[in-house]
Amino acid sequence: MKILMIGDVVGSPGRGVLKRELPRLKAEKNAAAAVVNAENCAAGSGITAALAAEIFAAGADAITLGDHTWGQKDFAGQIGGLERIVRPANYPPECPGRGWCLVDTPTLRFAVVNLQGRVFMNPVDCPFKALERALAEIPRNVPVFVDFHAEATSEKMTFGYCFDGRVTAIAGTHTHVQTSDARVLPKGTAYITDLGMTGPYVSSIGRDLKPVTRKFMTGMPSRFEVADGPCVLEGAAVEFDPSTRLAVSVEAVRVREAPSRA
Image 1: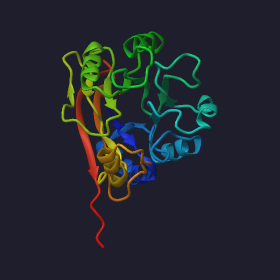
Image 2: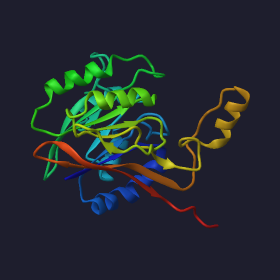
Image 3: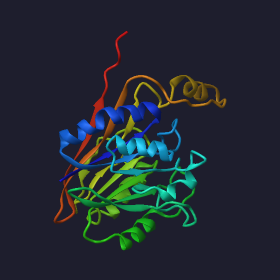
Image 4: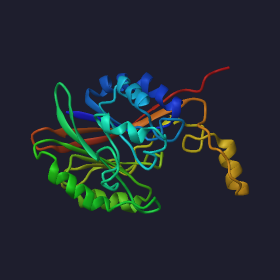
């Protein structure tokens, strides 16, 4: 059985390519479900209930978030009523929403956990201890898919090996650059350091190049708008054995749209 895990959806261009390509990709890979990181889907920062509905309609079965969870001011009041959306489980317990959820499809029941890293990121509770707590609560007979939203490669890799054999897959998000290390770890957990990005690829990780370049060259504040142009959808296809809940294989996936011709 296979599940797709899709990298950070950036703005309306990212939502557009997700709608165009995810249904076809699910069919092509014979995937039972798709887990989509959408913390950048609202103009590059955050998500809303309406946009979550749009992403579910595009073929997502669960949505994960990250450090931009609260990027849209109304979302804190919306997340509690939204099923199959998880924000980082290592946020303070007073935060609305949930850090893990169960997802039921016609052929599969599985759990999705979202966590945020601490290296070069805003302060949060320990992601290692937070996953331990989540695993103590999740039913033991379901496969578990983890989105670890983190900056540092070393933190992501250490996290992967720490929980190898205890979850079905650990996929990194946040850097918007797909890594080439998709593999099954020694004890049976599928792993990739970063799934990549779903959004415009002629960009600086999804943002328009001009203001980003200006900021790097001058140090002056700039408003980073989402870029236009052709898009890419990136992620990974995880194949696993439902009887053991361990991975059989993991394959990085990329759908790259051709530039339009004038």
